[in-house]
Length: 474
Image (cartoon, rainbow, N blue to C red):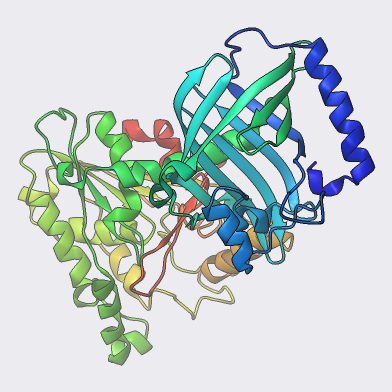
């Protein structure tokens, strides 16, 4: 795939073949190169500063590597760290009229994922595209659970490099029949591409778009009803999560006309649960919803108080049964205005009586306390669940699911659910059920630590299937 894989003789032979190709297949003026291109080979020029003419080593911890990069005479040591011939799976370039993304798949020790380096188009001169590398959009996407990625910043400050962050690619050969394209870069390298349809690269681009949505979201517009005519929604988050974990979902609901009032919880709020561990109710599994979770129910009440008229509740995971308890305890002037409660992946049922886990209630009695309450008359209750992940022993997704389902139902292998909540536990007495096929429980990793949660870019959760259940909020 790369020049580092070729011997000197092979490189010289390829140089000859490429020269012949360029002569026999000149590109048309202003060739449309938008689309996806797989990189098949890189032919690099001889390094005049090195005796090793055909060596492409760029040691990450070498001062000389960084000197060459910062003086624009050498490649990025960070990129080279993951793009050695032994670690790269594929390299894809996605070109659009505004930008291009270089996507490098790598497998380096315990880390497997992708490096995305983004360039924005500065100008075009016939087939020569000049671009500027930018930090926004450039990042590492490390493989995680449920098909998602943990997004990490690409540690190169392109903005500080000034014009050293500029580059260009000039297409000098193209064969429409085979889709082969040859381009020369500003550092003298020759790149051999082939037109492709790379669905994995598209999925990675969607994962990047998730970060961009979060970064661009205007939080000052949360709860703004001035231009949003649909029914207001109170959003109740999962355990150890905050309103910021739901910004893409909020943006999507806003686009559909719904003002959203997310329940705002902090790390300190969640840590306050610890006080319940020092009560006799905790150890006897008879904890009442209040005061154990009064920080949550009071926050729900605060958001509801901002709404005049009817509203709906959208609740995720633990937020489902907390919001049910809040609504049942609320005065009729408040509960009577709630038209629907839609829960996403909420475990509404405690472990079955007589099961091996019946004496171990993870909620320490909180769920039993909520389930003693009656549903509010006139309010529609809908439980949205998923059967994406089956408990088992093949891979981390199945093992994690099996452990979680076992704690909820006393059985794990072959049980279906969203990876955390099984379908049966998500059923709600007195409500209707919607079963999705491909939604995972969430698209972030909750943390009890005050550092914020890790987003799982690309993990398709309930919010990505909004069309399947949004009508229940109306």
